[in-house]
Length: 117
Image 1 (spheres, rainbow, N blue to C red):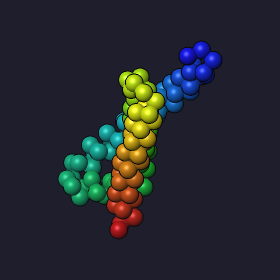
Image 2 (tube, rainbow, N blue to C red; image 1 turned 60 degrees about the vertical axis):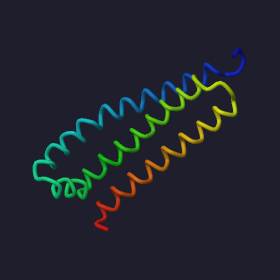
Image 3 (tube, rainbow, N blue to C red; image 1 turned 45 degrees about the vertical axis):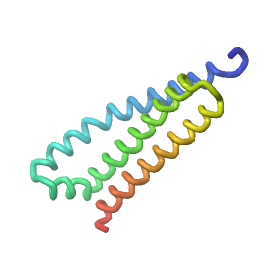
Image 4 (spheres, rainbow, N blue to C red; image 1 turned 180 degrees about the horizontal axis):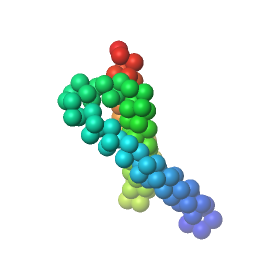
C-alpha cells in the first residue's frame, strides 16, 4: 500500500479512537455517580436524574462518545477483515447507518425525558 496514504489514515483514525477513549474515561465516573445516586430512589429517581440538566448532559455525552467510539472500532474491524472493496464499502455504510440510528434513538429518548414530553 505504498503511496496510498494508508499510514496517514491510520494515524488519523488512531487519534480519533484515542480521543474518544479519553472522553469515555472522563465521562464514566460522572455517569456512575449519577446513576448510583439516582437508582437509590428507584425508577422515578432515574427519570428525575435524566430530567436534570447535568444528568441529561452526562448521558448525552456518554451516548455520543460511546457510539462514536463503537463506530471507529467497527470500521477498523471492517477494514481489516473484509476481502473486497465493495463489501468493505457496504459494511462501512451499514455500520455508520446503524450507529446513527442508535444515536438518534438514544438522544431523542433523553431529550424527551429532559424536556418533559
